Length: 185
Ligand code: ADP
Ligand code: 5GP
Image 1 (cartoon, rainbow, N blue to C red):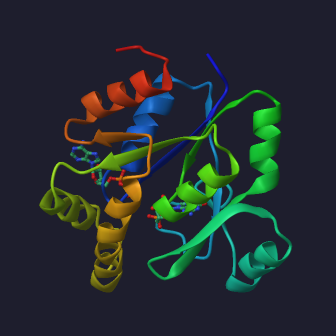
Image 2 (cartoon, rainbow, N blue to C red; image 1 turned 45 degrees about the horizontal axis):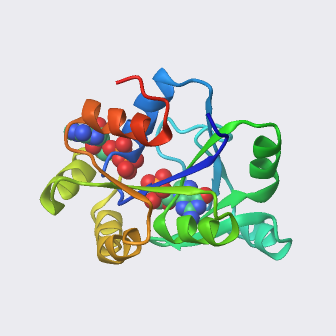
């Protein structure tokens, strides 16, 4: 299998994290990049595992020092992928997955044409909203900010290489496996 960079995006609450977790359980040779963010940790999130949680100043310093491969502002917080880590993993021939927003995904594609962009879409907008609310991790204002991003996200998704509809979880994971070429389904 070719060593490639796979970039997975989708609206907040669509189930990206759940699909990727299912994929990684079956394909442990893949590495999920750990991003930096200025948002506060959710209950149970661990610094260095879920994210590198940075202050606004620390994040700005990384921008100024050109340390990010890509970064974007999403629903009031900043998120970014460190260049050095990605380059190192790819040089070592590792299979890498980035779970980042659609703005960041398009930035990656501009710099690395070989990157494969995969958009995870909900079966319907009402399902998306129900999943986001049902997760109980955000307050109402934050949920609204995230829902306000959906229209633009769907527009950017038109430039992606693949779209997976996350209706049935097992089916969505299988589709991801087929795209990545490591077909176990
Ligand atoms: P994201 O990472 O895209 O923000 P999550 O992976 O946190 O989304 O999923 C949001 C919620 O939707 C979670 O409660 C998760 O259990 C649920 N979920 C994910 N995929 C499915 C699915 N295929 N069917 C039903 N519920 C799902
Ligand atoms: P959350 O706050 O729910 O963890 O993530 C919010 C959004 O930020 C999601 O769309 C997620 O994919 C995106 N995101 C996470 N890490 C990065 C990153 O490094 N860069 C960019 N551009 N987006 C990211």
